[in-house]
Picture 1 (cartoon, rainbow, N blue to C red):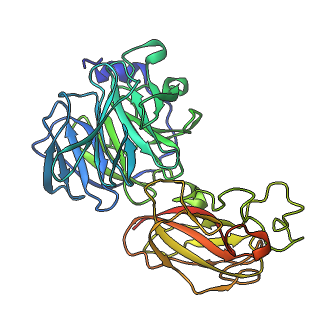
Picture 2 (spheres, rainbow, N blue to C red):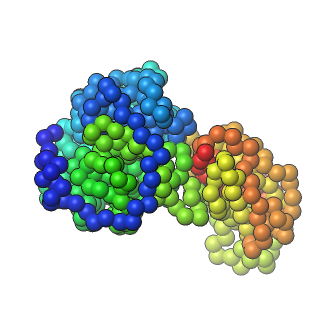
Picture 3 (cartoon, rainbow, N blue to C red):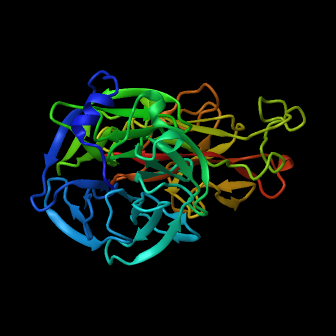
Length: 423
């Protein structure tokens, strides 16, 4: 759609600058592509997907800029558009689509439509017509921990529709909530958003010189100044590394930036489903022990698992800390995300949150007082569990419980954590 000139917007819409935390790690400029309106990164391979404004195809490149393949876009030619490679299976418009699917978000006319495209064959796997958009939706991203889509609209509609971010139900297309970036002085021309590993939204605009960070509910967090020479951004996409992003410009360049917002000491580690099927099934063990006494606990929750550190394949610094388990045998195990993301499958007196490719990480050991399976306050150990490639793994602890306090079996499960391993 027609937009005001960048010169005009530079005089009227610049947001305040913040400390320059970003660095340029790489850049390429595909000679046969002009203005870029969409950029996405495959979290497994690291390949970069680009969409040229009004182009007929979406193209895939290596991280060094070598052309690899292309597929036809879905829907009409557009410059109000974005692309995304989903890192896990999801339900889009009532159809479950696999991890690695290319999403083509077309916001050119009326409400935004989201097309799921097979990145190998170009076949359209599913289509979602959302309830959001006034012919100017320029960006979008999947929020993994919330199981929702976020879309962003430029400033042309004016008034309450300008610079609007909306959270979308990916099954029905309904709007779950919204906020305006202009409340923080950040105006969208060509632009995009993505989700940081901490769950916040990273927003870029071709008329701004920063990346703006917002919480999913719209609270402004900060702005991060772009490195010198990185300008007119129209797209942003995350890599498998927690603090790397690719950004694209409407001048045709694609840059890899380091130092993007992460999530501190718990980077890439998110809560993932409860291990207990209900508070009455088997959440308690030794009578009288804290959180293990059925009679004295109003709302027992069973064993707990948290993760801390930087999960990098090159560093192996992830620590899993188990707590609030009875003094009995226990073991960590690892698996991949189930199709029913966040729900788990009934297993004994609990829910197994990792239901595919499950492997044990340690042999059984006593939970209380053990450095490998500690109770509350005991030390924990670093564990990688044989992960050799970047991606998502689910971690959980199985532990034995006294038969008198269980309804089905003699064991239970902690909650789980979802860990995205970076390179």
